[in-house]
Length: 74
Image (cartoon, rainbow, N blue to C red):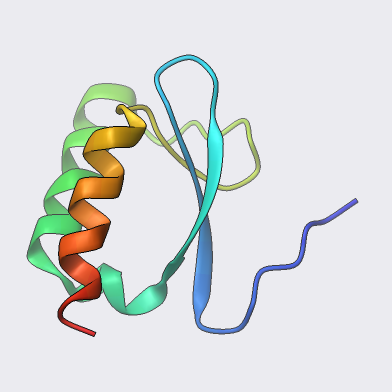
């Protein structure tokens, strides 16, 4: 069963062991700090995403800190 993602957002699964689902605006893809995070994830882990969405294996605290700063620019 697919989980609904609102238009203009993408689902991201974040966590080092247990993954938590976040919805982030697609506009984050244009932000240099988010692009850097995605580049680091690609270099270290590749593009294997078993959760069915983008998987970012970093701590939730780091991800929340980054995205809260990005929300200020929306």
